[in-house]
Image (spheres, rainbow, N blue to C red):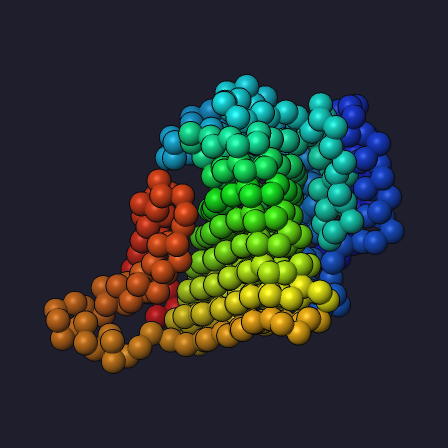
Length: 428
């Protein structure tokens, strides 16, 4: 495998994309990508996550599949996913925006448009953002009006089908919530097919003063597929951001969550649960910048690892000079269910102000044998006792999901995932 993108083949692929208002931005991003390259393990933020396989998939796709028509995802598959949760669903299938969903998602207080039709400047100065922008067919802009409170969550379904050939897809969504608006958002990633596939997504969310966003990200990719994703959040005065992330699938998964607290009184609460089994690699990197005070951030991520698997959690909080009154909390807890499981946990605090309250902590352990013994004395066999304890460990994250209608669905997803882990004796 190679760690370098085939830049000439990439340039040819960019040239074949639709000629629209994104064309000049694509070329600028391509030039940036050629100059900067892609992240490697020599970069501190990527030292535990090797993208060689992702680059190999991309080069294979550029050599063959990029010249072919993007395949359609079956409508019944999309409808089955949308029917699980009642929301205003927007669909990006195999990197292509479903324009019919754009029309359906228009509702009171919500306007949706294609990025090729919107006056939006796309950022492409972050790792893999260059690649995303260069290969972007089109994306979505979602605007929630001032004082609006949409009746249902806004759902973003990013679905890929790699049944016929190796695939690469890009998704881009720009969201802004105007002053005093309140909205629930669901970002749902799913993929099927046994061919190799790599998906790369970028979402940018801007919260106006006194705005509230309740955001849930669910990742259910096929166990042979890879994904990198980035969510950038900018928060205004007295705004509130509640984020819950769930990683169940994928072969190599990298999530970056970056939060800028730019207004006093801002509150960011973000939690995550990752359940990794044999052969999976799940990397969560979070960064919160406290630029003014008082403001508060609270994060807690939990992981359940079984078999020969590796996960990464890197949580960074930066308190900038003048951000007095900052309150920043970090926590990461992990259950390792086999000797082959590995977690790289790295909490970081950078503090350049005096009047602050900051804390961080991480724990790594195994199932409590005394608790297992207690449950077995009450009539449970070892498998069911293990399942009960792992579910209890995961449940605290599910219980904090702020979109109420999702909690039952997520409980079922967690239970199914843990049942497969326990019943399959993976790592136990």
